[in-house]
Length: 425
Image 1 (cartoon, rainbow, N blue to C red):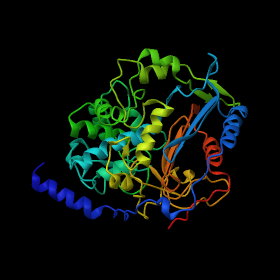
Image 2 (image 1 turned 135 degrees about the vertical axis):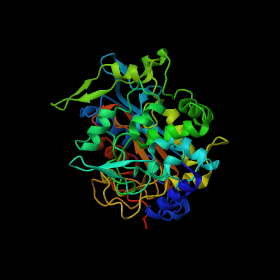
Image 3 (image 1 turned 30 degrees about the horizontal axis):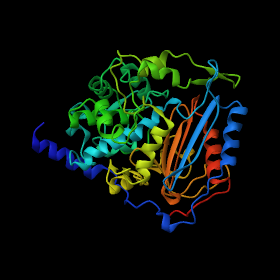
């Protein structure tokens, strides 16, 4: 593609794209009531109730506030059948809590001027230049505008994840981009050949977009994605036990996955998929959207870096302004189709984080503070960063399907069931 044509494409994309919302600094501690006080007895009771009720086999939680570990607790078993209790050094598959790590990696390259957020994705990954949209009847048409890099950071690119029943999901499954035998380059070509669920920018649609972020990191940095993250995030933060690839000795400390059966009881999943994801040297795909295994203290270091606006223990991972931008709602008000996002509470979406916009509106809504940003994982893991209360929390469990009641109860235990926090805009 010639430079003239590319500049024309970029201009068209910027003209057609919904305007990005004005970036507002998250609520500062000085603007809020006194910070939440952590009640150890209340959190202990909540974790025990999760196990006693049969919703989880084992759980653990770690809360940091004002630079100190204010709470750690665990209940139940990491592996019930093997008799292994949930401990502080238990390793857990965090699935989509990998996504914020990938987002930080990409935003490091943005800080270096390697790309612009409103650049067309195809400027760097040309396979995404001619995307098509498929409707409910299986008819395709050209997308109304190019996918922008901002779109892959906020789940507005229009990609599928293959979990639905529509034609785009069927095409995604047929393309099989996330097959572990693919490397990221092959993943990209396969994904680019599958149609979009909607025009870029039209809706919030959870997707393989964060795996595209990983491909972009690889392309821009010239390093394998896993190696880049190790060198620029995990090692600098001292996250020594976190990674996609784990040594065989780590398997003994890995929590088992428990699937809820038709009778509501949790049944241990065999280790076949776990072995493929984290212990098989034949695996070629390093996903940006999943795959990390971590200890709770390791992931808390990542969360504490974000609470520190990009810095932890003298190590600067991102600039404060970059963290604030990532933690600010980036969804245009016209993006009214938001899939399951509203189930997370009164939230918008920043760059790889959900962002709380308003106080909890109902007794059943998750407790939290305006300005917090967070994400969770397939097997019900959770973390959040709360600048208003100078607090971050990490919750580990391996329950599938996702059980939102565990998050509701843990948040209520951290904040108190009636907590509302500072008011939003």
